[in-house]
Image (tube, rainbow, N blue to C red; front, side):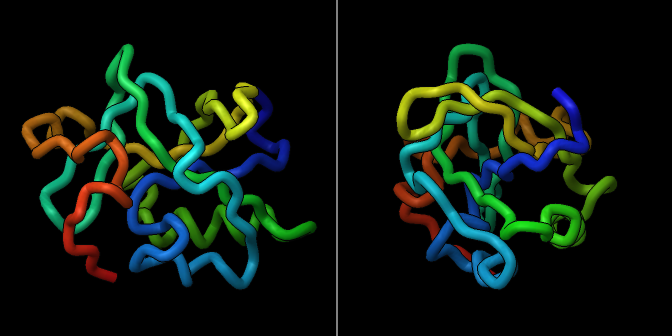
Length: 138
């Protein structure tokens, strides 16, 4: 997977449409498939304010794809990197996700920079932040 090729960002928590931080990207990107995007081999955990996606073979998490407006890929990724605290809090990596049509495609995913530090956190119900009924803070 070529990291320079424009790819969507798979979002699974407070950056999903309608969640507390989605306004951070809405002026330079569009969402697709919210609630119908599957992030294979990842589970969501949380301390209550926002989730983390951790590697978990055989588990699927639910999310959304965010596509940059034409010519704004670098700006979108820079904004996401700043929001996610790359590289100290999260890191951005390429993964395969399943879109709403069942096709596999590569997308950027933000995962904890130190995943072992988060394994003890509470699981997010159904691996779907929007269905977890947790208080979302901006």
